[in-house]
Length: 556
Image 1 (spheres, rainbow, N blue to C red):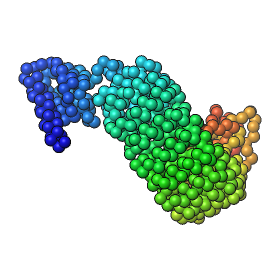
Image 2 (image 1 turned 60 degrees about the vertical axis):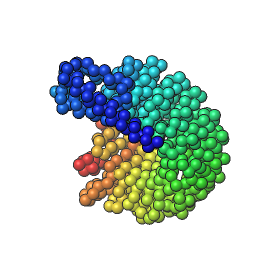
Image 3 (image 1 turned 30 degrees about the horizontal axis):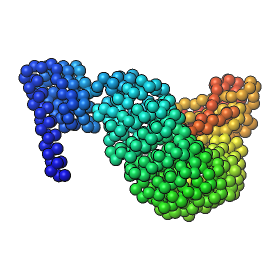
Image 4 (image 1 turned 135 degrees about the horizontal axis):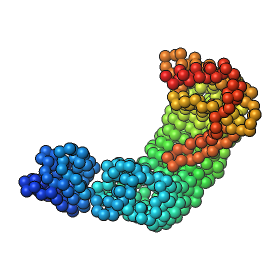
């Protein structure tokens, strides 16, 4: 084996030396065309070519290097050469005709030569059969060294997916991230080809996004079987919004999670209709191999039930389970289940940094109380807390803010939007918290459901917006609440360090909760035209002047 490697190395050195000799010959004889296609020229050869042409500009105007392997930097070495004013080279050919068409097509979309890119994002561009085949030819060429390929919502068919995957099979070594989310017609053959690619030991994919691809039980089995045979590279897997995984699909995924060579760090199963039984299977698998997972999204799985939450809580109590981000929005978490979860986190509090319990309207007094007790724990270093749409009351807001006062230094983002029962005392307590110099909040969201909108976006601009019928009155206590918050934040700006970067105080009729294909969910709030002058005036001069005074200080 060592002898073969030695001779391979010698052969490569000879070939690269041969390239330089050829160039010297061309220079001396004043040749203007040089064809070096399919000559097994490597990255070293490309560097030698660039160096020779730079140090001794020749009469060469056309150079053909199709069919060679440039390595990660070869293309850039020669492309940079074209920018040299002393270089006479006009045409530098790397690609065959089909790949060249693909290159031109992609350049037209992204405005850059894809051979020089490490990330290519063609998401939301509907790709017909011809463009897909051109792109496939480009991906197949060794001059294409992409690390990230994003083809989300491209309308890929079974055949289109197969063409792309087949291309990646012949040039597998560079890609680290693949996003095929939102392509609902991948089909059995598309998933089968993807699975064959995942089994290739040269294919070292780290992130795979198949959100909303209508993956079936059968296809999930094929995928997980492929990952079992080549498990060591994948770090992030997104199977969200595939509602037909079924018992056998979840079982096979769980078997994969039990593999000690499978070092997954992020798993997204949002909107997969996970049942109590399936949640038990998943958490049992994670218990047996707990040390790698850092982010888990089980949002919009309303059938977790008491036993599902109990098993998840048992997992959270495992000291080897070092989860940092837990997303459970829209899981119909009850008071009882919230108590179970927070009790588990109390026993192992040090790792979690993000907790999303939004759109769980049944947390209740005891649920919020237990969450508040957890927030008071100095070992609990939560940085992001999302309680959007949890029907938080005035009383509960007081409990939460009191807890944060006693352990204020870690939280960076707080979302209390669509909790229209905060009331005057709730906002007053929140304002008192904002005045605490140890409270280093960077983002605060308080978007609610009323007819008049006041939105402050710090470091950007100030908008006043309204939605509702003509003559609609301002919410009676809104002005006083804005005054309270602005007063608190004004006090904050006089101090040496100001931490609050974003404050949102919006009121609209509509709320849309959308799940993105970037592994997180966002809250989209709709607004309409700017409020009329008399509506602004109705807020009172003191309210407006103090609001603008605060913004002026924040924007410095």
